[in-house]
Length: 166
Image (cartoon, rainbow, N blue to C red; front, side, top):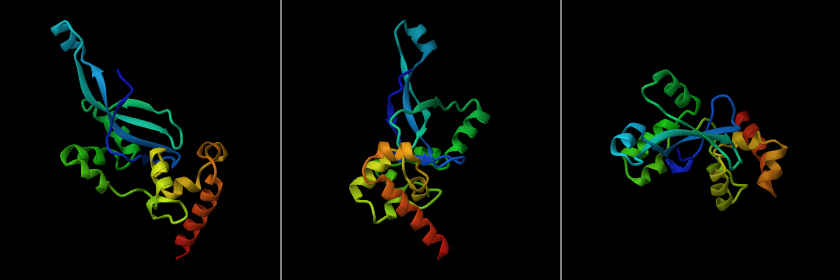
C-alpha cells in the first residue's frame, strides 16, 4: 500500500482529544489482492484513509477507512470532526468545494492579524487550523516552526483570553 495519497481536502482537522493532533481524509493507492490474482497482474484501487499527525510535524500515519467495519469507521471519522464531511463534499462537488469546509472547533487562524497571509498558508500546510492550536504549541513545536513561533503563541493566548472576555 502506498503511503502517498491524494489529499482531500487541503485542511487538517483537530482531534476531539487534543488540538495538537490533527487528521484529514486522503486517498491512497492499494493493491486489490483478488483482482490481481484473477488478472495475473498487479491491480490497484484508490481507497479513503485517515491521515493523522502531530501539528507541525512532517510525518503522518494513515489508516484505511473500511466502511464494512462500521464501528471502527465511525470511531476514526468521529475522532476528527469535519474531516469526513469535507472529504465527501470535495468528492461530490467541484475543486472549489474546499473553500467551503465545515466549521472548525475553535477560532480559525485565518482571522489572526499578527501573522502574514503567506505564513498562515504555511501553518495550514503544517496542520495548524485554529488559534487554539497555536496557543497550545510546546517548546519542541516552537523550535520546529522557527522564528516568530513563540510570539505567535503569546499573541494567540492573548487573543483567546480577549475573545473569551468579550
